[in-house]
Length: 68
Image (cartoon, rainbow, N blue to C red; front, side, top):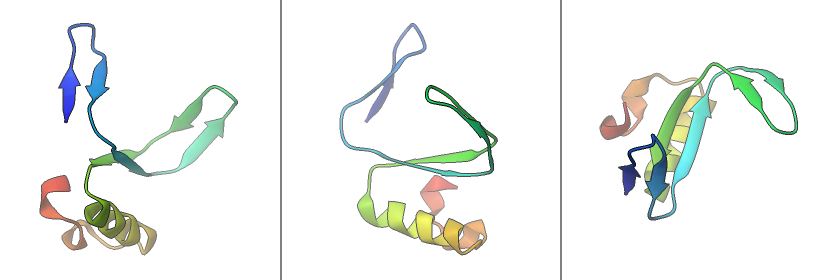
């Protein structure tokens, strides 16, 4: 799914959901400044489960274990 290249670039060979949880400190047209936890998920159901748990401020016990 994700391959790391020698120059620290990542390649992704299928659709991927990127979910973050954390405050947004600043945003411009070309940058974001956030302090966040990121979840990279390739399964629609798992992405929705993580999103809903974060939205409701649930703890990690309600998330799929492989993403904790």
